[in-house]
Length: 184
Image (cartoon, rainbow, N blue to C red; front, side, top):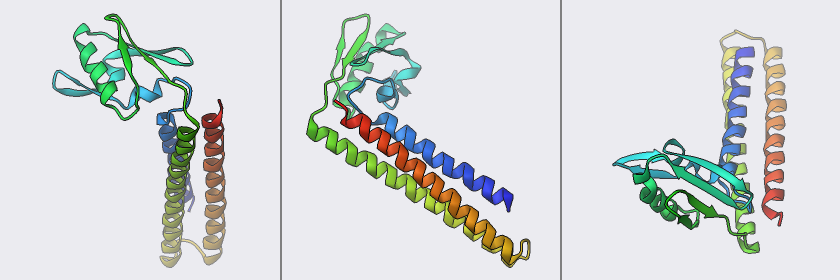
């Protein structure tokens, strides 16, 4: 029974981790290297993440700088940023690529909050799916006489408590992200 609970806890924590990763991609008013982490550059015919062919840094809260190690990659990196769905305009001075993060409009902020809530709902669905799997595993154990009916009830109670805890974590994470997005 403990194995089922431990496995479920790991999977629920994974759902929260995935939610954090999704939130990293959401553009707030602040510059962060996570914005360009998902951009893939066609580097000599090979799709390569920007972070694997350049150094990415954030010198201030409104700018991201990208310095490709190979001078021949400047054009490809610049093109990849322009064609990404982030709406960012890179400026290439031959030594470094600078991306200025424009301030968000009120309308865009509200859209981002909706997207954040959708990501959170997806994470909650994943958490509830883990709960269902755990409960099914416990019921099967009880049916196979591996645990008693009392253990089943106790286990289901622990599963529900764990589910509530992780759903609350997801709500806390989205509340913090919403505050960050709406912050001017």
